[in-house]
Amino acid sequence: MTLAEPTTTNRPRGHNDRVTRTGATQFVAVLVAVLGTATAAIGVSASRSHAGVPTRSAVTVAATPLAIHRTRIVVVDRTRPTVSHGHVLSRYRRLPTLIWRPVGDGRYPLVVFCHGYDSSPLPYRHMLKHWAAAGFVVAAPYFPLTRPKAGKWLDESDVDNQPADVSSVITAVEQRLGRQVDPQHVVVAGHSDGGSTAFGVGYADRLRDPRVSAAMVFSGARRRTMGRFSRRRLPMLLVQSDADKSNSLHSAAHVWAVPRRPKIYLHLHGVGHLPPFASPCRWRPIVEAVSTDFLRAWTTTKVAIRRSELDAIDRQGARHGLSRVTDDR
Image (cartoon, rainbow, N blue to C red; front, top):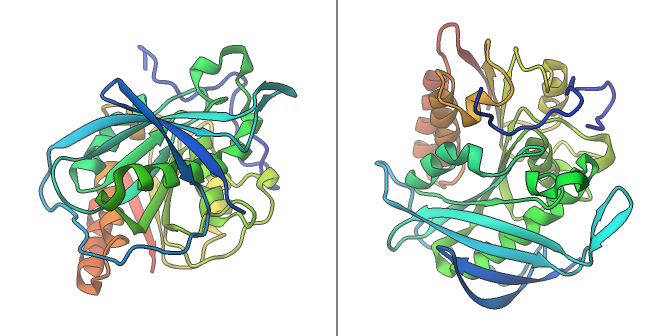
């Protein structure tokens, strides 16, 4: 990864975030496939700042787990090419996107999740389904040049193009699901290079999307190639392990320094880069509980509920020998 000075990761050569058996207005075309059945393409506008925001109505956030439904759409952004190592592979960017959402009526906040390098949304699906069952629409795109299917065209420098992909996905999901999505509460999240992507969407001057109301950065870094980052008052949850050999504590410190309060840092102890987010282990329930409380806190307008959820983070994240919380409200 290309990072802000000082260098902030120790990613091994060939490292990826796959789970192994061992351990400005854009126009995009959206081809929708629901449960694997293709339907007609839909044209959507991907403006990062849009007028005519629907009047806010009651937002549903579940107190108990909800039944969830998975769909799939394909977002095609025809305004930007796919270029790997200087080779133009396509005149557009194709973003297959998995969506988990609660079954039935309701209006739910949107979470867009960004996968790591040489990975996909699937290793993280337990966490993503957990969020959906808590009352969130969760959209997880496959990025064209950082997913395993890219093969010899895998290109980590394309991470700098992924924040604009996220903006296209936000627009597509909002238009596809309509009033099922609350446009006033959009959260970006990601792991590793996906965490860097989410950080860019939230805080990089030339890449940020003003529709985003909070960000969750899991083992992500501040990339120098994304340009200047502003100290915005956008709520952030940062999660980092002291035993992560791919993304260092030094890297996390540079991410933590950017946003103004409110922000929360979940420090994990003794676990590696991927397991807390994608593998059955003692740390994954902690990450899932804390991130869900964070989502609930920053997708409500009720001060008492927000305070209760933030207090819950302090309790859920304080696990002796496993994790601790820095809460800078």
